[in-house]
Every structure is written in structure tokens, then in C-alpha cells.
Length: 502
Image (cartoon, rainbow, N blue to C red):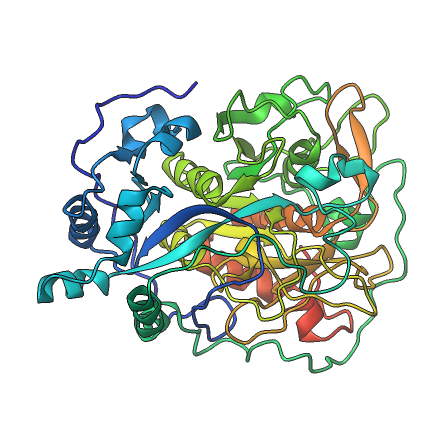
């Protein structure tokens, strides 16, 4: 149970101003813009993203809502290590994150009235231009097949991987004024979220001259195929001194493999209970990114950053998670001083015209400013060759590394999503994501499963090794990852900068 430190109603904590990103920074690889995803599953809550890094502007936005009868204002800083209780969130009017310029608004009449209200003054109008309001989405694991279990509740059900454009719950309607306001705020948001002037052009599906993947790899008695293909198997790097946060279904704290669970230096849950993994997905992801060098008991090595410190945030429960739980995990991980954040999760729909969440992009930019690189699964909504879906979820944000999946012969996985939209949602790297062997909950202990969920932690683990080797963090670390990526003959839309390699 999360523990409160202060009474509700105290002044909102100021968001620490991050280090300034270089002038002209506009995302990892492409020019971007802000839009609204219309085909997804929504909770009814609203996410308010403040477009300014000035703590005074965050205070103005909080005061703006407070003056409109949104007074029951929860602060994540009121909780030990900012680990809040979702039951408290649901009973309050709004919650304010301490490390992020973001608020969560509950679906209550007084909140709806505040959102629909016309500005009463020029000052009100100025405050309204400081923030964007989005519908909160639900998120699920990005793995598939029977190994993921509970497909309808937590993974990608057969229905969700059927015909394109399946529609979840429709977003609640906003007032005509607010709809117009959201359209008008696009230009301001675009100024905040634009593109890197010195980066490659947006992924456009243009073919890249092929090079050899090196044949087809297979697991051996010593290494998984992914560790061989990426060059990790031949490296002595361990990720020592690097802190990796895994935002997922939790972790198997009783896992018997040597030097694994003992490296978890912090854990939190945002979906109730404890951070213990009752599914297996989170343990599998953590195993790939940070599993032991020598698991023991005649088990082949499956982990990359074998001496990295592990932070575990349980943000997905039996019915999945949502933007609040995910942002809570990010907020907590920033406070814990992590270097990398992995998110193998996302919505379970094929969105025809993808756009990224302003809250995810702002969180990623705050993270980058603090030397933290966020990495996420591109999604498994495709069924190639007949149906190819765009990147979804947190991975669609320009400042979050989006990872596609390939098989052991270097072929793009049939389920892997694609970079299809120049306004966000490009692929940055491809990584091993088919028949990936890693840790699982007891008593199973290990299993092999597919998914972009399995590809993403390969990138996170390799990033930890490079961070140890070079001392690089944040955006410079991303650029070093990009410089080492290998062309394996696919389009930029499918593999981005290439196959992740050490």
C-alpha cells in the first residue's frame, strides 16, 4: 500500500527544470507534430500536459483548475518515493506528478465543467495555451502467443489482431470551444515537439541497400540467438553502474537464477498489491535486458546487462494499465535516478492515422534532459503481408526509441508494426523478437516467446553496455546506438536505423 507523507491540498510540487536539450532538438529521428488517436480504448480520465518547463507555469495551470472547483488535488510528492495508490487517484479530482509537468483529471462533473468553461479573462486564455488535454488510454503487454496468457485482458486478443481499424470505446466528447482550442494549440505543441535538423529524414519506406545478417542463428548451450546476433555474446561488458527501469507486469523476486533478483535495487506498484510478477511478461523483459551472465543449472545465457542495477515498476495488472500507471512508473523511475527505461507495452488496436501522446513525448523529453533514454516496443498489431499497422503507444513519441522485431534469420516479424507516419511513430531500431528465451515466473522459470516486447529489452540492455563503455547518457547515448546499428536490408519503415548491435 502506498504511504502518504503530507495532507492533500498542499501546494503543487514544482517540476524540476531538466537540462536544456540542444537548440533545434526535435525528436530522435524525425520532424513531428501532435494529434489525437481516435481508435483506442479510453478510461474516461483526461491527461493534461503542460508545454512549458517553467515550474511557475505548472503552478498557474494547477491554480487555473482549482479556481474552477477542481480542488481535490492529489500530489504524487505526498507519497513515499512518489508511489501513489490508484484508489486515491480515482477518488480525487486530479493528480499532479512531481517530476513531470503533467496532471490527471478524473471523469467528474466539476472537472468536465472546468474543461468546458470559456476563459473568463485574457490571463485565463494565456493559461489555456500552456497545456494540452488528451483522453487517457489503456495499455497492454506487447507480446503474443499462448506464452503471454490472459490474451483478452492483458495481451493482444485474436479480435484485436483481426481486421484493421477495430474501434474501442469512443473518446468522450468535448465542448465545441475546447475542440477548437485543441486545434489551435497544435502550432504551440509543434514548436515544442518538432525534429532533429541533423538527423536522417523521416522513415519513408525507401529501400536500403542490403547487407548480410550473418546467416540464421540458433540458441546454443551457451547463448540465445539474440545475444549472438547482436554481438553481446562476444563482449565482456556487463552494464555495471547502469540503472535500468523495467515498466511492466512486475518481477519474479524468487527467481532462482544466480545474480538476478539480487540486483533489483528498487520496486514499486501502480496497479495495487506488490511488484511481484503474477504473469511472467515483466520477468521475461527484465531477463533479456539485465539477466545474469551465468544463470547456472545448465541454462544458456539470456541476459545482456548482467551487472546492471534493476528497477521494477509494476504498471500493468490483470486488466492491463493506463496512461496514469505508466506515467507514474516513469515519474518514479526518474526520481530513482535511472539511466534507461524500458516499456514493452501499448494499446491493442491498429490505428489508421497514428499520432503520439503529448504526455509521453513530454515525459520522454524530461527524461532526456535528465540523461535518461526511454525505449519501447513498436507493437504487434500487424499480420503481414496482408495487414501492416503503424507504431502505437509510447513508442510512437518522437523522443522514445521504438523497436521492431526480427526473427533469427533477420526477417521482419509478421506481427511487427511499421513506421508509417511522418508526424510521429517512426521505427528507430530492429532487434531480436521471435522465439526469444528468457526468464519467467516460478515454477516455469524460463520460456521462449515472440513479440516486440522481447525486442525492446535487447535495445535497453545493449544501451546499458554502451553507457558503461562510453559514459554516454540520454541523447548522446541514442546517437551512439544509432552509429552502431547494422543495415540488414529492410526499409527504414521496418528497421529504422538498422539492427541493434554492440
